[in-house]
Image (cartoon, rainbow, N blue to C red; front, side):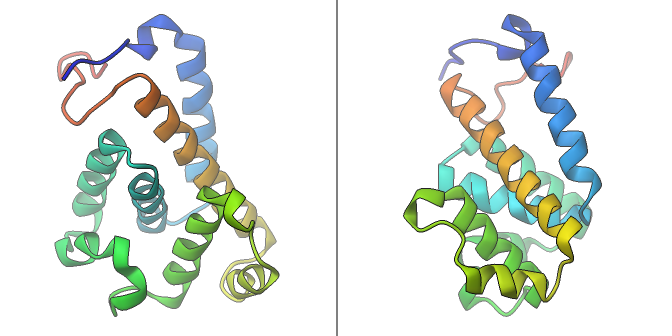
Length: 152
């Protein structure tokens, strides 16, 4: 496997812009929830690089491998809170936005657990990971492709 290009080096401003969005999106949510969102979107988008990175991050935070293995089938697994469930469902709806948007009923269920500011934070988190997924897939990134010395 070979990376098509190192987007960090080719266009550092683009990378810095994405990092700014990442910092903003991460600031409004619980870290575990944020990682769940990243993993679910990365599963849907087929981004092995991001999926590897965020499953490792969630494992460090939660230590619960069983939950991580079952994120893709969260509807059938009893290991997620109601708030996590609606956030995962929202992640699916926003990631697959052309399949039907975000139905009003889903919005109402999300709002039972999250206020308006948190709702926007959820959307920003989903938008951000979808952006990272598209950047990683388009440039040919794969698990382990980064230089461990430089982080790039």
